[in-house]
Structure formats: C-alpha cells, structure tokens
Amino acid sequence: MTRIAVLLDFDGTVTTINVLDSLYEKFAGPSFRTHMERWQRSEISTMEEIEQVFKTVKATRQEMEAFLRTVQLDPGFISLLFFCRERDYPFAIVSDGLRWYIDYVLGIYSICISAVYASEIKFVDGGFRFDYPWFDPAYPMRSTAKPVIVKDYQRRGYKVVFVGDGLSDVDAAGVADIVYAKDILLQETIARGIVVKEFHDLHDVYKDL
Image 1 (tube, rainbow, N blue to C red):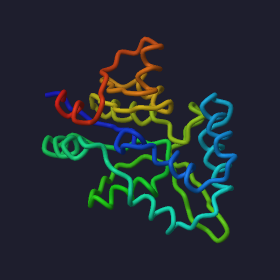
Image 2 (cartoon, rainbow, N blue to C red):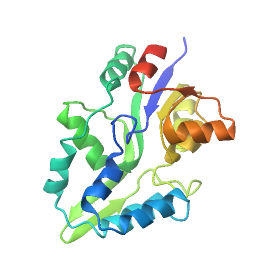
Image 3 (cartoon, rainbow, N blue to C red):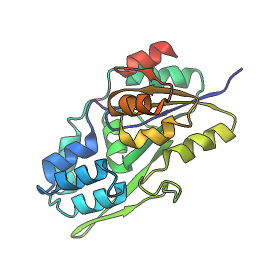
C-alpha cells in the first residue's frame, strides 16, 4: 500500500487570502510595496523582505491578532484535513511565512497541526526578532526550504502530495510526486513544464484524492 503525505502551503492555500501580505498592507509603512516587488523579482530573499517590512510596523501584537481573527480558511480545508487524519496520512503546513500567525489562525478554528514548517517571530521590546529554523543554504532566497522538506518525507518512504499557489512553492513543486497548483504557482509550473493538477479550492484536492 502506498504511503502518502500531504503538504500544504499556508498563505492563499489554507487561507482565502495571503495573510503575510495582508499584514503588510494593514500595518506596515508605505515602503512595504517596494520590498514586496523586489522579492517578487528575486532581488531580495524572504528573510530580507520580512525584516525590512517589519521595521516599519508600529502595531502591537494584539492589534495584529485582532486582524488575524478575521482571516477565513479555504472552504475545503477541514474536509481535506479530516480525510487525511482518517487515513493516517501525515499532514503538514510548509510555509515561507511565520508560524505565529499560522498557529493563531488555526487556533481560532480549534485546529492544532503539529507539523508546521515556518519561520519564527519573537515580539521583543521595541520591535521583532526572527529565526529561520527551516532555512537551507541550497535555497538562499527562501526562509523555509520547501523542497528539502518534501525530499525528507520521500526519504522516509512517502509519496508526497504538495498543494500551493505562490512563487515560494515552485521549487517544492519540482520535486513532489503529485502537485496541486493554482494562481502564480500554476502559471510558473506550466511555464517550466512541471506536471500539476489545477485546483480552485481545497474541495477539489479532497475530491481528487
């Protein structure tokens, strides 16, 4: 019997919006767009983008978490999660964002996922400090080396299903066994000749699996 592991991006995949970009738009100074555009052109890394943008954030943790309480999950997420749990498929979130808001948003819905691969933010007096436990120098532009994580599951004998929507998912899509893609990831994988399955929301992934 094939052993399957399901790995999902978070921003714009598990959620209906890109949470990190929305935090920038709501709480960062006007220069955040310049940093985002430079990241999109691969002129700066995710780490540089996060740290430069958060230097302009004056909001408190409480103010940002009040916004996080408005974030909605993809309508098919719960079905997909319980489908995997019923079959004992490992289920992980693999994000180029911050674990703080991932855990917070999931907690609103009383969901706990132990396998969350993302960067860490620490709220300190006068600002923020960041740690990147899943960084790998083989992928210097990303705070979380998603293909390294995919390959780790494969080494453990799993056929990896990867689901994503953005630029930070492209490398993982190149090594996963089955890929579900939408938005920018769909465009980029088609351009690179990577075979993927298009999805609109996670109900599509759930039904296909």
